[in-house]
Length: 291
Image 1 (cartoon, one colour):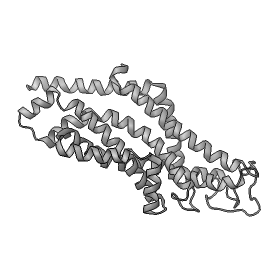
Image 2 (cartoon, helix red, strand yellow):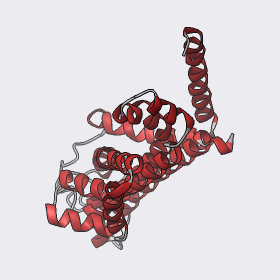
Image 3 (cartoon, one colour):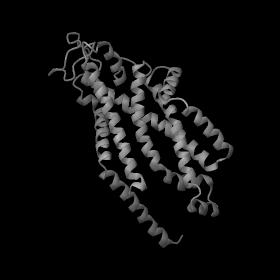
Image 4 (cartoon, one colour):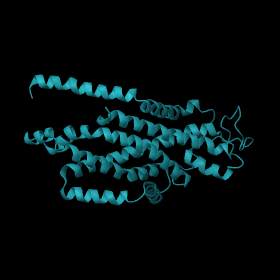
């Protein structure tokens, strides 16, 4: 490639990236979903500043108190401020949502790239193991791994990450199969470029868009899975706040103190909806068929 062609290629790529960014920012789903997720991220980061009380501070004179000026969301069975616990509980949900997806991508994407690019017996082994994991429902698999590893927030992240990993193996493998026979890949091979460099430089950038979209959607699934594991006693351990553990406690007092279940439940719904809207918006913005 001549220096002129190189010079012209860079602005073109820059223009494509700028166009994709503009499409993302102009899509209503991306804006709404991103705003919701950003709100919860800020809440989690600023929790010590904005929470009116400590998450584990008990007031035995205000047990199961209805929402009031002192306690906007009411109090729980131990007199703890529910608003403060919901705020601090956002940390557990976001941490699991992000870390578990990072684990799934870190394991799943390289396996999918190798399986799709090299094919042969490597593809057969990886694909059959992936199919076996995908045959189990995601939540059942996460519960099984969490029960095996033990109840803790860290183990819940690992369990959810491993359970979500097959999704990224299959997605990245399919994307590689669709691009590995393109002309620019064949040209790179003819020029003697190593397979490792072809995968890193030419394949990965062309398969990342759907992986980013899937990662965003999987974060919503991970938040729900964390709440489910915590509800079953396999996630965040008391007294540390988690929306799932708050719901587990609240189910015992639904008739006497329904507000104990309302606020953590609404928080889960809002965060999951934010991730789903963000993922849907990114999918529409990054899908070339939609443009």
